[in-house]
Image (tube, rainbow, N blue to C red; front, side, top):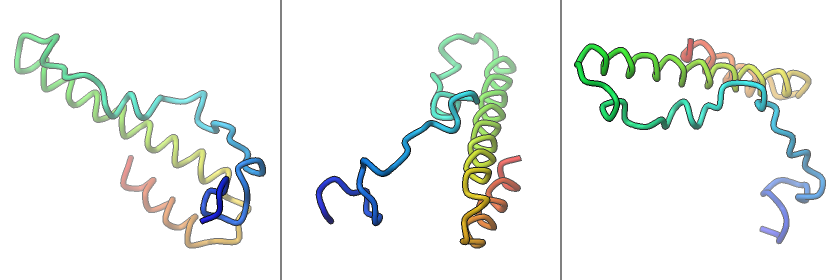
Length: 92
């Protein structure tokens, strides 16, 4: 692999690194949050927090996929769009 390439036929200078998910849920934080047992005293509170964190994580993944699909909608690779569509179905 050539220096300063991303493994594609473009250099780092040619790639637009705009964060297309910047106004949405921070999926990384939502899916890797701190252990809720630290804050909660009861089992029910613990289970509720786990469930809510899973929901927020899945919402973040779904919104990210939606943004990626919108960016890729004009691509000629229908298999990529179909794969994104399938992932979106699983994450809702």
